[in-house]
Image 1: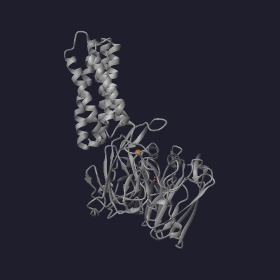
Image 2 (image 1 turned 90 degrees about the horizontal axis):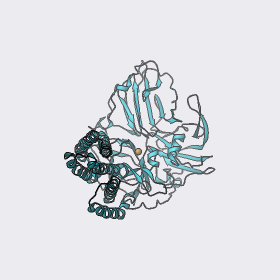
Image 3 (image 1 turned 90 degrees about the vertical axis):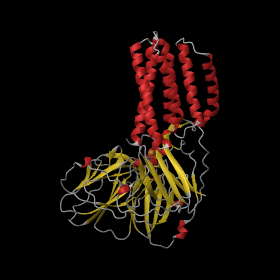
Image 4 (image 1 turned 120 degrees about the vertical axis):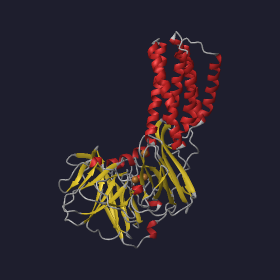
Length: 579
Ligand code: C2O
Ligand code: CU
């Protein structure tokens, strides 16, 4: 069983246990003896079953089990210890066990709330609040049922409630507030003034675009979605003038995966101010990395990218050879945008499909009718990629895969999520059952260039209640905090930095660090065995633990966030900062 399914199973069992204890309490209060005993038996079994799931989660990593071991386990033990013996003595008047059963129900549900609302790391404040809630609810139920509760219960209730109030703010206080983000701008223009320059203008504006035969309202660069494809040759200087015609939320251009100098990175509030309607901003950087990239607004990025403010950036080492096409996949107004059609190609012609996922969720791609190789991922060439047949690839939000093959004489088709987006003739469409490539084991291995790390950081991804804003929100959190309260990761230039990224939530988080490609070291404790993988976007699935590393060689203040942009907006953004 994967850790992800264990997390889900544990959650389901915990819900079942809570519901059964509470149901048992209600049934006994209503003197429904068989029902009460049946529900109590289910509750008992479910509670005991959690010994197995919690132990297994703790073995997969303390991050997955901390609050369950420290808070849920003691509360569940108390539930079993108090309700169990009374049930076994099953008195003639079943109503007498109602309060112990309610107590068990409150104990298991408050522990469940700690997992759902607070998550990792477990804190004393959360534990005390949970206990206070249980005691208070039990006392109230006892009163309502006219049960006689020992004096000590109320005393304990009072003490715990006061302690919870005093420490309970631990629920809302994140460890150390994030320092203000500096705004220092270099002048790249001066550094790279007289080199061959590729000039582009991107004008952002509201537009109505044709999305496969229907008109939809969009936000577009130069009136089109995607925006114009920007191409350059290694060594060129790219100069892009961004104008904002009428996007009220402001616009910037972020060069996704392109490790530009910090002041060109296009993150509003961090590397520049958002460009307001009527304003402009000029980006300049040297195109020194070949490969497939994309650009998008980083101002109100969730809605901005979804509405269409994105485009492709391709940097080639020299003139394009063969058929070299980009396939930016995007969902506009809820439906997949059609990708530009390719003409028939003659057999033997080398083909490069640059697949780009510009959505916030993973897409599955399959090429049918030919063997192919994955030549590059996230703009970086792989070492020794071998031919693949009848194999699908999963591209995370923001990620890119370059697939290469020689055009066969027979038809070829490209499928995205089972839908044919290109085809040069009829091919088998049963790509749904194909195995999926695991890039961590693909291509020829090479040693990791570092043996020690100057800095290590752990990012535990979860959900939690964020009470630090005017309106409370159910945030996507990193180490229990939400943007802007996640402490930045501080490194020095030249440091070799290692990140451990742990997903203890129930959803995929496509992780994206700006300004650097990271080398994948291991996933779930298994070292990567294929070609070195230098990624800028990778899916951390529920229950997964990724180890990645990079050299801190690009000074500045860099966003480090989930590229499900709704998650990034809802708290899952922090910063990497050079001291
Ligand atoms: Cu493509 Cu910070 O994002
Ligand atoms: Cu996410």
